[in-house]
Structure formats: C-alpha cells, structure tokens
Length: 152
Picture 1 (tube, one colour):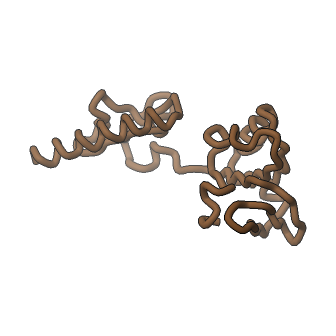
Picture 2 (cartoon, helix red, strand yellow; picture 1 turned 90 degrees about the vertical axis):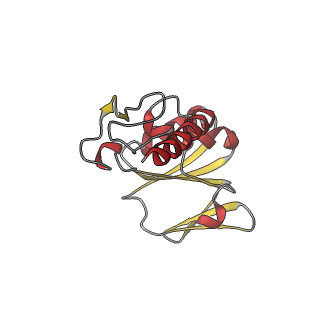
C-alpha cells in the first residue's frame, strides 16, 4: 500500500477528501469514527464504498502509477482513491502524566509540554488540523528543542 501513498491512498479523509469529489473511493474503516469520516466524504461529493472490519478481511490495492481498484475478499471495486482510516495512539498514552486539554497535548508558545525536553506540534496539539499549523509548530518545536539541548 505504501507505493500508492499520495497516489490514491490516504489516511485522512478531511485532508485529502476534496481531491476525490465526484470520484469513486473506498473507505477501509478500522477505527470507531471511520463511518463518520466516510459520511464526510459522501457529503463533499465522493462516491463511497465502505468496508468495516466485519465486511472484508483481505484487501489488495491495484493500479499502475495510481490506484484504480480495491480488491476486497476477491471482489474488485473500481476506485480512484482508498482511505484507510485507522485508530491512532491517544497522546496521553505516549507518556504517563503528559498534560492534556480537550484531548490534545498541552503546550506553551515554545511547544514545550509539562515535561522538560519534551515538545509537541501539529495535530496532537489540537485544532485546527491544518498543514500550515503543523509546519509552523514543528518549526517552533525544533528550534525550542535545539535551544533546550544547547542549554543542557
């Protein structure tokens, strides 16, 4: 599946869904909120074929340079995109005692967490879930980490 990452395979419906408006896509729902993500794709105009854990056990993605089909338990579905929606690790489970706020890692303006030398950036720090925010915070976190290492 990795050979199609960015060429028809995505792990984020809200990030890449608009690229597939009016197109056939498959959603492989491996998380509890995958059906909501599939509904989001339908609402923005994607033609969605949804697969949850009980519907199929074996998947194969086919195509030349980009995805053109999903094989699910031997049946072929012509699609231009496949969204693999799986559960992530809850940030609070990464480090015992990590301070959280509204399901996100709490940081200060330097992206420092409540643990000295531990920094967080991007989606794990909360909304908005946008590339520009993640890049900016990542830059701040990297500079803060360098400063921390220089001082220790």
